[in-house]
Image (cartoon, rainbow over all chains, first blue to last red; front, side, top):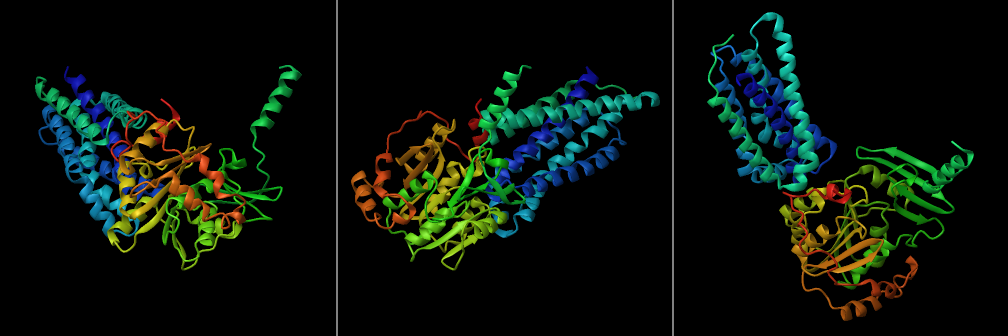
Length: 198
Length: 294
């Protein structure tokens, strides 16, 4: 159960990041268009945030790591998407009014809206590795399985969002739905009986 | 495979390959490949090799004013709703046929063009006789960003806005939402007119229709392969007014090679779509997914 929930958190986090990334492009389009540089700005911000998230997640895993805390990380990533829902349009309007160049306008917009939730999501994988690895000789195997699940989640999040969700739902409905799932998986992590760390 | 089957395949291949003519210019822009083909005195602008998914714009070299495409003639039908526009905005330049015609028809009017791709502006100028001037200025900017900027600056309004930015294979989704059309309406003077060039065979037809209807109410729908939506920011002129206004252009349209009266039978306000179709919004804009079919 413990390992299953742990993999669930990692897989969901991968799904969540790519879902948000694709919706980010849709949210920015009415303000900056949907040119290649708008996507370039979004992908840059996501990659940058993930890279720092890995670093910070790894550091954080040193201090008293637990599955509950991992659940809280997933929950925190979801909560920091709330500003997008509440103030996204106002912020995009203000930014597009001040930035004449749509390249840097979209870069700043992506930074303001998506940097924090993506950074926190980036913390999940290295933190989860710490919870999984017991012996040195299986470290690579466990890490490999974790990356498989997390990146598979990303692939699923990309496909489902871009092929189906945007056809069925409104952007904010999708965002609220993903927030809801994050709360559920975080709750699952909270409910699982803690385990002594390897 | 038998020889007959091979011959049939070859025949099918030839039949499926559009006769695009000789490639005389090509350049790759940030957005697409911009190609110019010439065949039997007609020069065309295409965004795909061999014009595989259609020609954007064509001119007859011997009569550069002649309108090769019916859709451009239908777009001029907008003038029957408001025959004397002073300020005009065209979103999407293509070969520049429409701005060129409007310039000729209305020498006193001020025309702005928003075209996202600088390569298209270059090619229209070099190969299609387009020429910008103080009276006809081009901004290389996303159409929606342009509209938003002008709303914010609040210095200019238009009597006519033409939307010619939709391709059959790709629709800029942020240019086909209720919010965008409201912004367009916000840039129109009280009796201002919006003219949009789309397709009558598109699967998006009902969604597109209800979206325009949500913002402008009833509109004229001209269908003939292409679909031209002519909507008014004020009260929609009656067919009688349309007929009267069209008479004013009998001479003026002659250089383009058609009589304004030819358009009159196309004017229809009949709502030939499912009114329960989902309105496209910034929150829900899967235009290309809908167009590709579920």
